[in-house]
Image 1 (tube, rainbow, N blue to C red):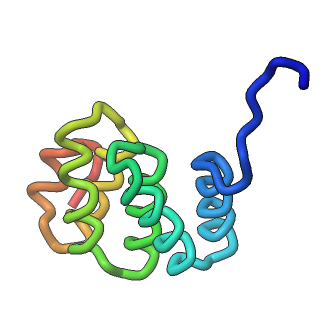
Image 2: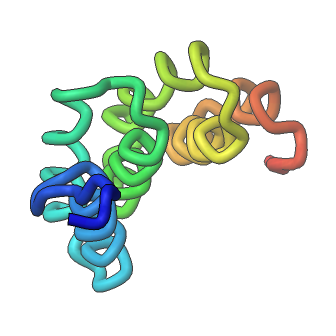
Amino acid sequence: MNGKLRQAPGTSDEALQRARLALHHQRPQDAERIAGELLKRDPRLAQAVTIYGYALLMQGRAEDAIAALEPAANHLSDPEIDTQLALALRQAGRDEDAVARRPFIKN
């Protein structure tokens, strides 16, 4: 062996890539499932939270997206999660909350 660690199949990086591909190919249910499995192992994994949020929004499930994104947005300093949360709030009809989260989102 060359001294470098290799990641075994099924690692977080591979799963994140599969979830991203599922989103890209308009398969939000698959992306939700994969990201959800990652979040069960590590709920602080920002990339998985982001993919999970996008998958829920693609399915028109704004309230579910808010429930998933809000805790992450409050604990992580991640502009993508903040923006997703604002979009979910807007989709759920909570325009004032969305603008407060991200002022560039207009009514």
